[in-house]
Image 1 (cartoon, rainbow, N blue to C red):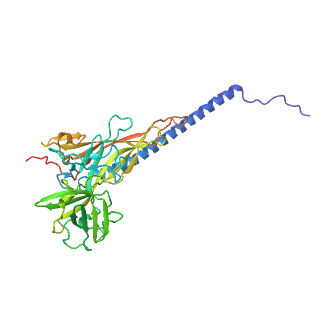
Image 2: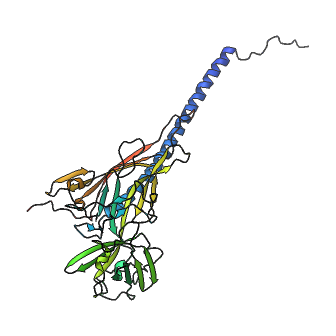
Length: 399
């Protein structure tokens, strides 16, 4: 018979358990810290990546519109607008209401340099401090407006006949293919034998479009702009109305520089040429806070002529611009906020547009927690310069 062992099996001592527990807590704590840093880094990278993508999109659109400013417009001059006691405006849609004229209501066109005030359309129109006050800023944001002609819709291929009281324009299409010598400026779009229909659903005229008319009155070439209010007809003949009381106040029959100045049209064909122009305004708009607490986050809007504005990017919280231009004596004026207008300098002499602040913040704010050490919004501020190559500049060289 075997004798039972009197030796008992030994376990961990209390001290060993405490040491093991302490070491385990250190390892777990380090792992949690690494995980928290990884979550922070992933969140920051995703927010910044999204902002960079949005900023590239905004920069591309702004650069395109600003670099085209003045394309197809009369070289070296602004276009005088109707001034029959009511000033034409921009930054409004067809509703004509305060809600359709953000951010601070409609904006009057600048006066031509010199005596008196003749509202004038330029290739570039600064909107110095005409925007909203961005969150956390004491300075108002800026607007910017660029104008150029539509190179896609061949409106200049139509013969034009103008009547007044009320002001209407009859557009007559050429035969297809376009006869040789029809209108010197007529170039049908690639792949088409003739111009698109006036009421084409993709590129045709709609209420709110602005049309630039150019024609000879006596020995001089004159210009006038009208806002489309209605389109009727079928190819080859269309009637487009430019009725008074339009939201942008462009149609002022009988006023100086109004479209009715051309009526009745000259008897000879092809003496008046029409082109659609784009008057494009960028501004900030604040949306209501979805929780009803204070103001919401601004977003960048783009408005074309008298059409409803569309958002370009969310969470753009500031836009500011300056302009390099020339004084009448040829002195270079760098980084002027209003393009030299306060100094009596014509806006046609602007040679460069500087985006001094295009500021965007992240969609979400980090909230400090056990797993998230980052708090607050991420942000980017873009600066760049754009040459308005289609504007007419003063000769800087002396001989």
